[in-house]
Figure 1 (tube, rainbow, N blue to C red):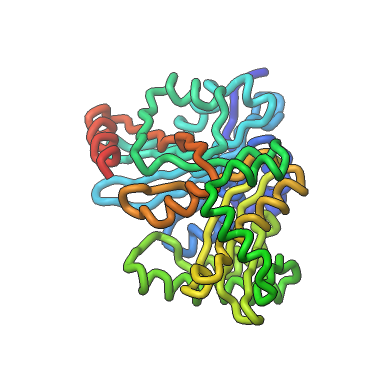
Figure 2: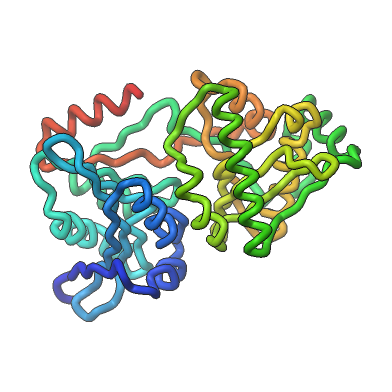
Length: 332
């Protein structure tokens, strides 16, 4: 099929349409996620990797940022391999690396965010990428192929009791905002709750709610769920959905959500919706038992099916740098 070519298609308006036709499509490879990362300081380029006859083999959204004397380069949720690309994964990654022209002080990270395939793993290993696995790269999953009664009966007894009480509470209502104005309002509520939660709990993370606001509100691959008590918002969930895998992406709530069991009811309504729409797996969004035991305990009440998340795969032209970066990140 000839020599592979890598084409910069950053400005191609049909990027999302092409990516979402692939079985490994996900939010992190989408144009909107790239626009969000651009807003917070990354230089983002979108690449199409093609066979000699022009057929698409993979799509990769690459983020680059200056760090010290080199660059950090990040590919989240990609390269997304096409069905043809799955058969030529090693050649795809060779072309991908060649196009990036990494310097000796540059570090490349590939994080498939739970969307990696065996073909991609073999290619990563074959090209000398080193996997970074830590205690925090684990998550809990729910098998949505089971019947609802089975899913519920597998939950912890206390968790089910609180859920049952919340279901009987007429003051609690659940909505899935759909219109542009309703979704934007839901995100603004999420932002207020999230900022208050960070102040209350004293934690920090990389989410910039101001930069993410318009992108999230207009992304059809994100689902919003809002819980209200007597018409007052107490919780907002943002869910990343693909055809088979749904991920509890972000959640923000206040003390009334905890007092009323709204968090459990919201998760149950999410399970019902995901199963109704044909999803087979619900990812509960990661766990950190040592750093955040409260949230882990909540999720463990719904499922104890712990799985290792996809690792961060590191590559550098310098073997010493790759080893040093892998060692440092493995202790975080």
